[in-house]
Length: 414
Ligand SMILES: Cc1cc2nc3c(=O)[nH]c(=O)nc-3n(C[C@H](O)[C@H](O)[C@H](O)COP(=O)(O)OP(=O)(O)OC[C@H]3O[C@@H](n4cnc5c(N)ncnc54)[C@H](O)[C@@H]3O)c2cc1C
Image (cartoon, rainbow, N blue to C red):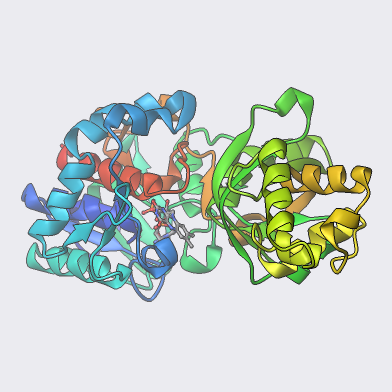
């Protein structure tokens, strides 16, 4: 084998997990090479949090793990090494101040993900981590369950340890195209079923396009199928030209994707009126009408919702927006109240991995040692970040997991 150079560790992927792994290994005096297939590192990290990078949140480790479902406890050792406080401290020491404006989600005070990327890049430079971009790793080289190095399109690099930090399949334009799954399978690992999670949803109802500029705060959303009525989410929602997006939709999409493969359409109900129930809504409209008896009904509904959405809800209730509230028949009023309490929509699909912030599924956790992130199959092979079968909701969960798993893999490298 014509090796370019021999390293203690090669990290595949310059995302959140890979950069953190490279830094911790280099701090442990290992010689480290990081290979990134795009022309620059941190492309996905740059896009996070709408460019502001919601890097973690303030939950306790127990509550944090619970949000990842059944397999959440897999993160216990990684979080014991690097929980949200330790992550904030890590960034503070490399020059990034952070804050949690809502007391929960943590961002850099600069409001820019570029600050995070520059700090990680500088730290790698200080620690003499060799970073080579535009190097797509094609194969991990091994013999008798021992690693020898890897091959890119045009080079061969030697190393006895390799960390796979190649991410998932979401937003492929930002580098994650599932390469790590193929590398892992090649070495005998299993990859669970992969599906897109956290993406906008398409709806059957065309009226949504008339409300596309509207952002609605504190929406509650639930599935209108008896068997799945427990599936609920809360948060802000934005109407789009073909459906819905926003934090509440991202969380809901994680749950709804499996239902979409079972049913061709999924009926859902939305409370768009900040949790008001029928009784409260009826009272509210009655009061508004009493205060302004000669004002059209639309104005009263607009005290609850933006005008375009108010018009659409009145249309659904078959009420002329200009009609005076006291003149509307009882049955129509009841329909309006019911539509304001729970507005129905029908989810018909999504744009798949192209717009998915997260991949559900990944490398089987049973084949990875949670204390080190090392493969139980091949000596010297490690995984970190989204490439593994763990995904959390919206709110700094996935980056915290990527940083913590990268930290553990790099630190505990043999
Ligand atoms: C638009 C968007 C916004 C998000 N916002 C947030 C947020 O605010 N908070 C949060 O917690 N999570 C957020 N997420 C999720 C979060 O970004 C990911 O979970 C996290 O970045 C995963 O980190 P990673 O290092 O595992 O993978 P990635 O960041 O995807 O990095 C993997 C890297 O590996 C490289 N690579 C892949 N294959 C190869 C190969 N063969 N050879 C060499 N290099 C390769 C890729 O180019 C990429 O740079 C967001 C995701 C998206 C898409």
